[in-house]
Length: 91
Image (cartoon, rainbow, N blue to C red; front, side, top):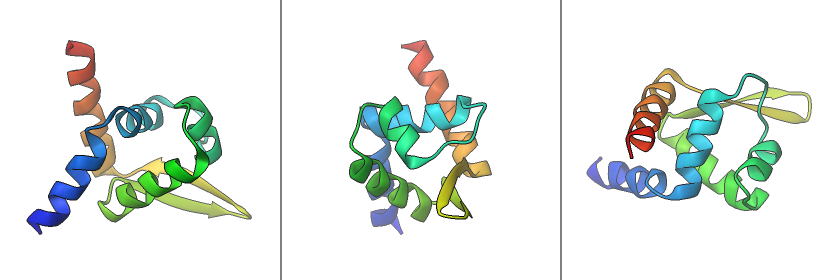
């Protein structure tokens, strides 16, 4: 269990994943991995890899609509993203 927590901690406390979470938190429209990749200036494959880790940690979920997967933050994801956003703004 501790190893799993360390892994997601290492994922989240980097610039791009942190930016991804806050983008999802503040987005007022549907977000796709490709849109998120452009917004955080990252490759699509890298964003998908990070999103898979976030999904395993229960932070994001994927809602399949046809061929598209819509990204949403879970309750846990919203809580963590809000706190990280506060820290980011405080700095």
